[in-house]
Length: 135
Image (cartoon, rainbow, N blue to C red; front, side):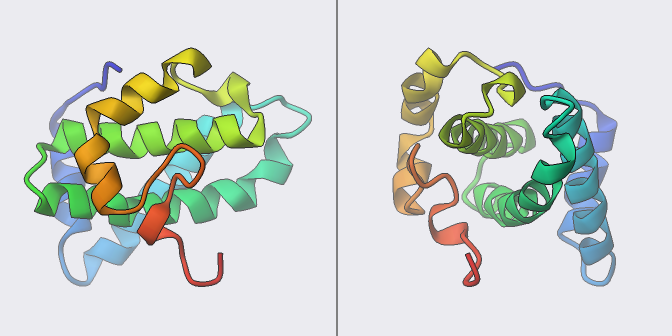
């Protein structure tokens, strides 16, 4: 998976992990990702998926920070969250939103297997331990 890298990604990483502004940055990133992926959805289904996408991307922000804390570089930490999202899209049958073909799911899992296993993330359970208590 090719993840773009620029100064905005570095700045967002820095801001996301700061006290006070981190929550605002989190909300902005969640909203931005929801918009991006809702735009890839079947237009007749995009609005009904937004609530799920908001909740899902909010949880992946915790995954992102955990990956950074585990020593992954910023692009790798982002890639992990994108792989999680593709697992989720596949599980919901939202393949039009996927960033890589469904037959590559296992390959992407294998690339980050150690991190995923440490946090209970599987293709069937893309959030693992990052799943919010309310589901």
